[in-house]
Amino acid sequence: MPVDYIAEAKNKSTPEPAVTPCSVQIDLYLDPLLEEPPVQSTADKSTWQSYQRLVEQARTACAGCPLLVDCLYKAVVQTDISGYVGCTTPKERAKIRRRLGIKVETEDLDAAAGARGTRRPVDHDDVLRARAAYPDDSLETLATRLGCSLSTVKRHLRRARNDDAPSARKTSAPTVEDVLDAFGQVVDRRRTRSA
Ligand code: SF4
Image (cartoon, rainbow, N blue to C red):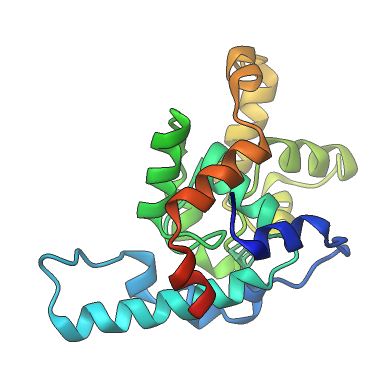
């Protein structure tokens, strides 16, 4: 079963637009140590301890985020971005995916575009909704509205144009409950609760 704050987050109403901790604590989420986690076996003690402190801070911040469930789901199932996202490190997300038996695309450009001020991944539907709502916007303006890279907008619109989104991927995608269960199994409960 997932940890308690996941259940709480699912029951929260999500005001629009939501203020997310990662859009406020930008320095924390974009810290180089969180962006590119050190390897424990090779990192010196002080670097590893600093990394762990940052993870605990980010974990606490994400745990209070109204978008946590949505963010976690997208970061696990839809887009593989770098850094600390949806209460998980990249390694934890990789473990969750292995449990779910899925692979996702890497979103290097979005990861690099940390200046957008949020870690929340932008998904296919987000881009199509924005395109429909602002049909006269340039692609650059749409990217700014969404807080993602121009290449991300282009990629999603190209996918929609080609109409080649594999339906099999959609029908076999794990449910939110699947992801939350895997999250609960992977993330150390004691560490989470003590953060
Ligand atoms: S990374 Fe996701 S869960 Fe964490 S604060 Fe940002 S939007 Fe919320």
